[in-house]
Image (cartoon, rainbow, N blue to C red):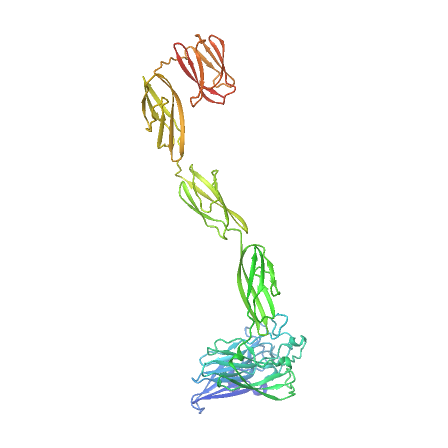
Length: 606
């Protein structure tokens, strides 16, 4: 299974690592090199001959790889980095026979010149368990002790590392399973990192003290908790590596041993061990709970000026995103927005265990988004549909009428199309929107009019009003009761002149017209012996007659039957001048009454 014929390079090209675990008759052997597959050999019969099978937990893309070919996975001519193992492994078997494999993460690449380079600027631990198609990477990246709040986990790390299984650049995973809770605890040494805690970003030799970290999974390794620092000795210049753990949790304790040195780790293979202190610790489950910062904030709004108050716990640094492109690193900043709207404000807080982010939507008042609906004809009900909570409304119905109600009802008096506009206002401003409202069934007020005939003392009236009146009221000017008939007849008790008025009405309104009637009086035609001019007239009306007018009554009436106060000048017995300069333009009736005649003539005054 592990020959060059199987794609495994010769040991001369690398170093190899093995592990073995058993469970009943099952025997598992794990083999790996950084430049080959991570291979699991399994026998279900105590390791007897012909009972072994091979599973590639991590498939290295090149067989017998020794750096003589370029690592160009996608064949684009550019060298690719391959994720592989760092030579440290752990196997864990639970009581039900499920096997878990953990392997440190490393990256390898080659330009094809006969060597390859290992790059430890990557964090993570491979995990595989029974039934999985292949290993999956657990992210352990962390920017430990980053006072600048810039998430840069590889700041200050040396550029090169050539040596495989170097304790200073490997993860050395160790695992323990709790048969009571089913929880898997994973411990590991943090890779060589974080020289920024020594204020030495140019530490190209990558010297650093390291701590032991831990995390846990409650679902068989599908998800993992945030990592926690279990030792916290790096800043006290104590280096921790060569980690091992007992595979079972006993009485709630995770038992681990490791080596501690007083010199920092170094990428060189010949890293000198100054002191060889073997450390033991029985960790509690609480030791694995990371002391994460908890972001939280409150805010107060003054129109577009927002004051933010930090409510976080455990935060060392702050990074605000105000949702409009603005940012801040203050703990409790204030920010002025350009306008209203909903802004997603996010606060990211940092401590040694990395960033945590919390977001809230901040809703600032915007000028209303104006809209409305309407129904009805000609009485129209308007419904405000504006957004952003208007506080006042102004309606223009385009017919001379307005309203400040939120949801008014308005009756249009005439048919047509009306551009109705609503202006809605709040503290954020105002906006206007208009809709065309079509009116087809408006009730228009009548224009009253009538005709009549007189026979003796009986007058018969015929309504000729327009716009379909529905009510009528007649006043016959003789003190008698009014009539509500459309076309009444009326008998007068005496001869004379009567100013008869008709009031016609409907849902659109009312209109009144009046006419003078001569009842029981013979009226002679005066056109044969009287000439009236000019007509239309502007200043004066002249009357010429071939009969004596000196005893005649000359009267001028307006359209309402009202007698006008005008000056009548008798030039001679048959010639009269009437001054109309001071009366309004309009239609008038000139009445001339003599001893044996009476006549009328329509006059237009301009």
